[in-house]
Image (cartoon, rainbow, N blue to C red; front, side, top):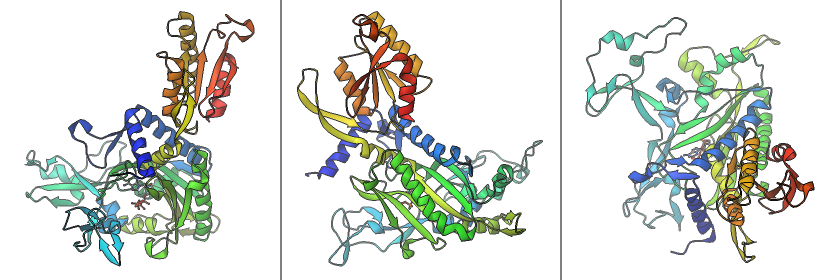
Length: 493
Ligand code: ATP
C-alpha cells in the first residue's frame, strides 16, 4: 500500500526513534505489549528536559505555585467521589465482519451509515460503556491462589500505629471484591490522572504552604488508562505521564484565569520550539464538556497523523473539592481572612501529556536537508532541530583526530569542563563530518572540535580556542575555551 507523505514521515520518525535510542516497544524481546513504551538513553533525556522546563516555568519561576508527588495506587473512595468509578468510560463497539474492537467515535460515516474504519463493514454492535481504569489489589492475599496464609481477623482490621505516624486506613476498609474464582481481594486503582491526589491533599498543602488564593499545586507523574485502541506510537498509550496544575481561585476569577492559563500554555509550547502556526485552540463545545466545567480549551498540534490534543485547559468550578468534601466528610474549605468567609475554591486546570508533547517535539524537530559530505558531494542530512532547551545532548566534544594524544587529552579536558553545566557527549571515532552527522540526527545543537589551532601549533593567537559548530546553520565560529561555559549555557537555557 502506498503511504501518504505524512504516513512516510511518521514511519521515518518511528524508525529513527528506535534506531537512535529514543523509544522502544515495551517487552519487545517477548513480542511487545500493545500501548506500552520504554524510553531509551536519548528519549529519557528529552522527556526529562521537557518535564524540568515545565516544572521551572510552572513552579520555580512563580510565587503562587507549589509542587507535590502523589502515590499511583489510589483508594477506591477517591475515584468514586471524583466520578471515575461510575463514569470514566469510553463507548466501545465491535465490528462483526473483521472482529476489530474500537471506540464508538472511531467509526466512520459513509452516506449517513456508520462503518468500520478497517474493513468498511457496517455490521457493528451496539455501543457499550467500557471503564478505562486499571485495577490491582493490595494486602497479603494472592488473587491467583486465594489466601496465602490464615490471617487473624485483627490483622486486617487494625492499622499498625507507629509513634509519630498517623493511623492509616486498613486494607479491609477498602472495597473488597470477589474474583470469579471466589477469592476476596482489596481493590485499588492505578490512577487515571494525577489531578485527584492534588484535590485530596488540598487541605494539607494549603496549611503547610500558607498560600492565599489564587494559588496552584503542580504535579508530574504517571497515569494509567486501559485504552481500547492505543495508537499513533506514544500518542495514545496505556501508561503515560501527565503534567498537571490545579490553580485554585475565587469563583468570580475562574473565567478570566481560564483565558490566562490558555495563553500561558501556548507560550510554553512556543518556548520549547513548537511553531505557533502548528498549535490550535479548540473551544470544547457545551455537549462535549464535562457537565461541571464552565469552559474548556483543547490545545492541539498538527501531528503527521492529524490535528490532535496535546493538553486540556479546563475551568472545573468547585466540583472536585466539593465531591471530596462530600465523599470524605472532611472540610475542604478555604477561610478568607479578609471577609471571614469560608468557601470551596474553584479551580482551573491545565493538564498536559508528557509523552504527547515528546512526540510533538520529535515530529516538529524532524527535518531533512541537503548538506555536503566529506568529499563535497551533496547528500540528504537528517536533522532533529530541537530547541537547545529540550535537546537530549547539549554539546558534543570531538578531538579532530583520534590518534593524536594531545588533541584527545584537550578534548577530554573540555568535556569535563562542560559536564557540570550540561549533558555532553564525547566522540572520537570516525571522520569528523560523520561525527557531526550522527549528532545532527539526534538533535545535538552544538559541537566543539579541538584541532591543531587549539594546541597553538599553527597560530599562537588561536591557542586555547575551539571550533563551535551550530547544528541548524552548520556555521562554525572560533571560541576561547574560557568562554565556552558562558557561551553555551546562555544558548541552552
Ligand atoms: P483524549 O480525548 O485524547 O483521550 P482526554 O481528553 O481524555 O484525551 P485528559 O483526560 O484531558 O485527556 O488528559 C489530559 C492530557 O493527558 C491529554 O491532553 C493528553 O496529553 C494526556 N493523555 C490522556 N490520555 C492519554 C493517553 N492514553 N496516552 C497519552 N497521553 C494521554
